Length: 282
Length: 282
Image (tube, rainbow over all chains, first blue to last red; front, side, top):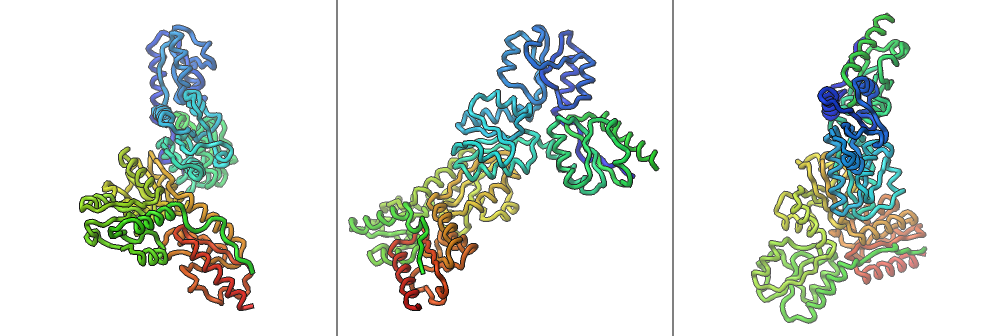
């Protein structure tokens, strides 16, 4: 039995930076450190940070006035950030720089007179933040079928959630193209996501089993699982405790990948547990 | 036997306007009237206008200095128009207004810093005029396969020959989309072309035979023939003299369409000849 890691997997630059900023704040400041919603979509990391003092809140009213608010990787709506500042709270912006660029380009398109289409999952935090930041006419479209359901103008500007699949993005753009006279598109899909997606795709074609590690609420991890499922038997887990012996019976090549919010220590624990299960069952 | 005309066929506004301007010049001016290349892609119309005094030239040196130069519907490269003006020649601009808009948008994209892609047929007059007018980096792409062959930048602007098929256009845009970060697209396909294409498609599904009337060098007429071929037995003719009795044997429903540069008098002659053939062979 061999375990093969995907060429690209785990923490991306944006997640790394967010955790470093949070750790720094927890270490160096005596103020209370808050984050609105999960900093990243990984419960194990969040649990660890919570133990060290990070407080996750759902509403700005839960903030201490002399606290520090960390803006999560997915960003926050601008009105919320402004409100926190007005409350006298310090801001540590841990928004992923790719998400920041997406906000900027979305705003630019609106300023240039385009009707804005945001391709993404309706209930994703990144999408929600952009929707609330840009008060103008924004249409969120998650699948090609939804194109018909929206009234689109003849001049459309498109941005896309950083963790979307290229295939879904291009299908939707193509459908919109049929309906417009002018189209301006920024492909804001994160290259780190694409690298992980392509690597997972290639690996899953050549193994008997794929283990995808990462938060169940992590969009990019879910996409990795979706992609692998087409090629191999695939299980999406958060931690080693979810692994089942039966999965590995008769399997020789086992592939591993992990979402951009999955830390290396979780990946390593899973890898060791797979080795243990397979050695034991021999 | 019945003959059914496509809902939209024949002369478009641009062609009508070009012929009116040319007739007016021939009628009202005592100067020699020139056109560089065929005014429209219909030899029968050109023959008629030539008899009335229009002189088709291939090179600006053939111009009389006190003549009038009519700019054909497909447009002329700007350097050529400037040269003609510098020679002291009067200009009558009969460029189709859709083609003029295409020139303007192509220029705008270059000015905005996009690498320009012109989707169109390499040897078409409209494409040639734009290529020569915009001296900057223009890439002409005629099919999806050609996308790979070109070195494209990360910021692409796209315009499309007015008589291209929507399907080819969207396939090419889709291929380019995979490669870029920013894309701005103007769908410059002429709606008159699309109306004729859709009407020909619908009609050809419901007849035994399609007769497509128009110049063999007319891009939009050739597209009509391509579209009809998928659904019904199709013949592309320029005049009634090309009709063959054998085509009509056993046929009950005969569809007719005509390109945007085909005059009504040719369509009517073809229609009458079909009636004559079918009545005679009963």
